[in-house]
Image 1 (cartoon, rainbow, N blue to C red):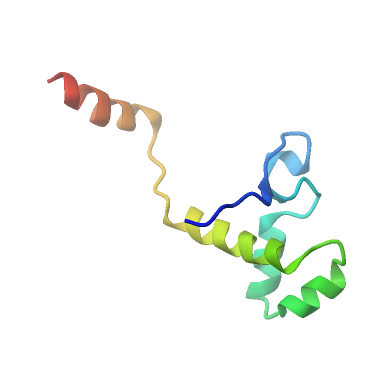
Image 2 (cartoon, rainbow, N blue to C red):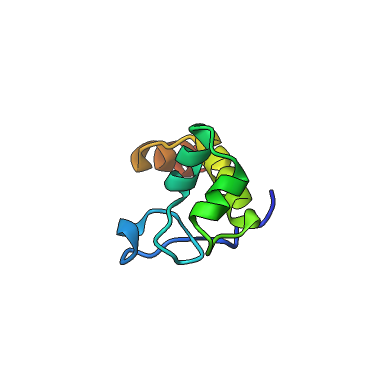
Length: 86
């Protein structure tokens, strides 16, 4: 997996949502714009502070998160830890 060093998290910025380089531009905003048919060029024009790599990493992060499976903690704990004890 490529580095996602442009994706940041800060509980004091946009409620802790994944953002681009600490700015108040969320991954969700960029993914929404792309899914609405906006080109990278249109997005960069609307948000001049962004770089092409920001949009690419936002899409990569969203794709990675879409593949993640979230389990309740107790299921993970009992499946992984107790399986080794038995």
